[in-house]
Amino acid sequence: MRARYRLILFTCVFFLAACSHNQPAKDSQLALMKTTNPKPVVTDKSKNRNRIEEIKKEVSSFPQIYDVAVVKGKKDTLVAYKVKHLHRFSMKKIEKNLTKMLEEKYPKEKFTVSSDYKIFLETIRLDERMKSPKFSHREAEKRFKEIVKMTEATK
Image (cartoon, rainbow, N blue to C red):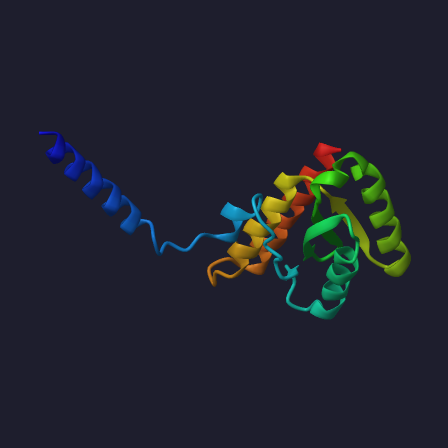
């Protein structure tokens, strides 16, 4: 009788392990647990990608930051980042220095900077939606504005 239960238990565990083997995980599901390193997103087709890639490199050069997501809208540029665990006590100082550096290097841009995990996660989700052909640039710009409003609400 015990052998039969063990066999049934072993079979169930085997099937559960086999079924979950090759399922791809979205970046948004793992964004809080690991470095996702997303590509910069542009909600407007006419904008140049080179500048936001430069912005991403500049922000990534900070030693306290380990993951950066940059979204360029029509008027604003959103920079969401994750801070290394040991530097979480100085997040205000990091944000202040980052904003100052960005405004000095790119005076014509309007930046919204956030270290909030929820904002970072929403930018990853926006990036994933932008890959879909059904998601238009108008919808992307609308969602981008909602994310910027969220950053204002968290401050």
